[in-house]
Amino acid sequence: MKLELRQAALFKMLREKGFVSAGDLVRGLRLSRATLASLLTHFSGQVVSVGETRNRHYGLMRPLPDLSAELPLFRITHSGQLNPIGKLVVLHDGCFLVQPQNQKFFSLPMEIIDMQPQGFMGRAFASQFADELGLSPRLQDWSDDHFLRAIARRGEDLPGNLVLGEESALRWQKNVHAPIRRTALLKNANRAMEDQPIGSSAGGEQPKFTSLIEGKHCLVKFSGPFDRPDKRRWCDLLHCEAIAGDVLKSHGIDAASTRMTVDGQFVFLEVERFDRVGLQGRKSYVSFAAVDGFLFGNRDSWTASAIRLQQARLLSEVDLIKIKTIDLFARLIGDSDRHFHNLGLWPNFENEASLLPMSYKLAPVFDKLPMMFAPIDGRVIEREFIVPVPGADVIDVWKPALSLAKTFWDVIAKHQLISAGFRKIAKDCLGKL
Image 1 (cartoon, rainbow, N blue to C red):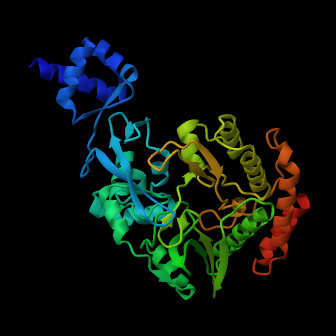
Image 2 (image 1 turned 90 degrees about the horizontal axis):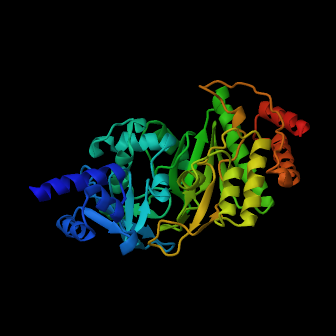
Image 3 (image 1 turned 90 degrees about the vertical axis):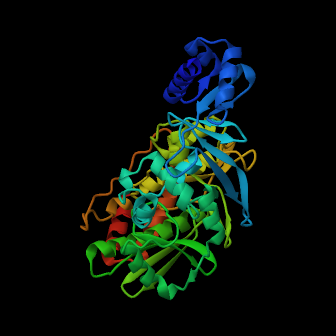
């Protein structure tokens, strides 16, 4: 009975506090270290330890419905090899342990956060798999545990190069990427709009699907027909996104490769996925949302976050200047959707088994467009572009960012595939700059 009482007290502390130091357990349970060590031997299959003897912490495993508390982890290499790297151990109080690295996390690791289905395709993902996973078809109802179950069982083709769970790993090994021709883009767009997800779950609200086109993994955004004002505006904005990437490339800032296709009354923007290498290879990728949330929790601006990363010696001065330029350029082209999922980083790990990056490098830019002019609830609402006043943190990149923005608006104003109405907007914005 004494053992049962001690077990109850031990488990209560571990449930409430996640990771608990040996010293706190000794004091909280009123035991000697020797007695604590003896007690823990009875629960070696439920309690995990991490750290050296004098700084050891303990956590209580928390099995998930239909899953173990220990989920195998894999990385997919550039050459397309699936490598086992360890396991993610789910603990109480929202904590996690990555073994064999013995890395402690007080929330989901950032790469796994970025694997969570979201946006337009995330909703389609939930609609497709909810019944077989025993989850709500409404993505907004999902908890962290629900996301983990989805990632561990249907996560074979999510962003980045991490695969979680034996079931997802087996599905990846059986997964065959079926290429499509550009003549089938409209058919795939119609399927996507019918909540029949195609490809993997990428974020964002603009209608899209993923596919293999001419040997390249692409995210395909689309809009049309032209005779609907709101759809016509989205067509213009897709052209803007492609042009913004080209303008940034001209300044030495890497951006996702894009291709525009017009099929009758519809426009398609193919964005090559930079987290994919060839048919099977992948690269690790993390969003600013995951990195800032994990390290700082501020999410104030791309510039402010990049400054914090550089001050922590996690980001180079060169990349800091680039991010400041991107941030100001986005404001100068009316990009009102500068959220933290719309900028990303390449993580640099000490080894492939680690989930804690040593540093970061700016990933290719994507999704930069004048969202202030986007339709709202199917209506085109004309808005006035006001030139932003640069703050002290970006004054050093004002001239290059201004030059890029002028080039952008000038190209838009002369682009014959863009509607006359939006070309006029571009001329007005250029005049204000």
